[in-house]
Amino acid sequence: MTTTANAPVLIDAACVTKFYDTRKALDNVSLAIHAKEVVVILGPSGCGKSTFLRCLNGLETVQAGSIRFHGRDLARPGTDWRPVRQRIGMVFQSYELFPHLSVRDNLLLGPVHVQKRPRAEALRQAEGLLERVGLADRLDSFPRQLSGGQKQRIAIVRALSMNPEVMLFDEVTAALDPEMVREVLDVILGLARNGMTMVIVTHEMGFARAVADRIVFMDEGRICETNTPVKFFTAPDTDRAKRFLSRFLY
Amino acid sequence: MPDIDFEFIVIHLPHYGRALLLTLALGLGAILGSLLVGLPGSLILHFRAPVLRRVVAAYVEFSRNTPLLAQLFFLYFGLPAVGIKWSGFTCALTGLTFLGGGYMIEALRAGIEAVGRPQIESALSIGLSRPQIARLVVLPQALASAVPALAANCIFLLKETSVVGIIAVADLMHLTQGLIGLYYKTTESLLLLVAGYVILIVPVSLLFSRLEKAVRRAEFG
Image 1 (cartoon, rainbow over the protein chains, first blue to last red):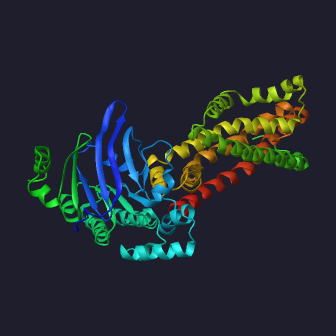
Image 2 (image 1 turned 180 degrees about the vertical axis):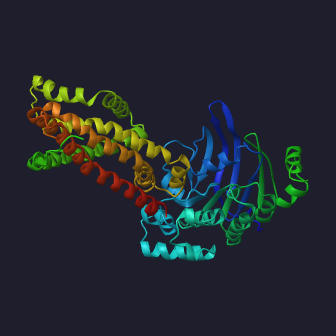
Image 3 (image 1 turned 45 degrees about the vertical axis):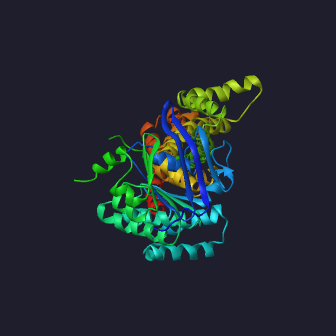
């Protein structure tokens, strides 16, 4: 979309290595994410892309390497993740709205209880964000009354209402019916247009090509290739990426 | 069908009224006490607090795997040997709370564990602290799904009060056994006994099934 190579680096992951017991889930992964950049991570199942994403907001611990964010190394043990997580929002594959809370209370939980913002102001912002994703009339609904696509859009709004600097998307359309995928992807495309910094793990190739500034291709816990979307999808540098892409063509 | 001595029933109705109130006080006290034991106990197990977790786990095994009768004997006849002398009512309340606490811990723990790891991660991802997650995300969902098990425990405790007569607490069962012994009016006494338990337990049971519906509606829309 835009060139962001000259923008300052927001998150700088270097040589990140993670083991699950003896299995290496991440092997020396280095990736610098620039401000306003949209990085899409692709790769086969189990390649470590979700694990890497989860390391960026402390849902997984890493055994070696560094993750620098605002001058601090988050990979160090003893990191206080709570302030970090307010600046790095995350959206999950299975939405994970809080089923016992209305949409309103789902959206206010973070701003009111974590950021201690006034309820009225947080509510105004939440209403504005709901409007943007086309769900302004759903404030009083409960999650179980919503479709998957609606739930996922609310989950995006919940993360946005913390005013994060970076958004992480972990296969956010993988659990959706095909006709609902579009409504969620449109929201993410809108965020990209507004200059949100994002790291997106997805299997939607068309979407990846449309939204990404940079494609990162992973396999077996390593980054195999980093490329522009046009080059990656037309003439990838590595054979591994060629083989991966060939599975998406009929 | 034996002849029923209605005069006997009328004469002893006030005694049953008093015994009912005592049984109710004992049962409700035990329910409240065991919930107060159960909530922190289940949190200790869930958060795997070091050392405390083992103490709670041992307590759960001990309380659930020994008969209430033995626990009451210990409190009423055993404790005076070390200088602690409690009234029958205090012993009964303590014994029932000790027993119920173990059951409540397990019911609440099951409710807490029904709230999945992804919910907790989702709460972490918006920066909530561990205590906030427990209070705002996990416990409301856990309590809602634990209501049926908690209801079963409450009714269980109300019925378990029937053994406290063994340490001379004048509950419904104790009164009935006494009257049968004195007057041989078995049918009348047992009728009053059953009526007493029905009056005691049916409202509780109905209350819980309404609570279960209300909680589901309020909690999950």
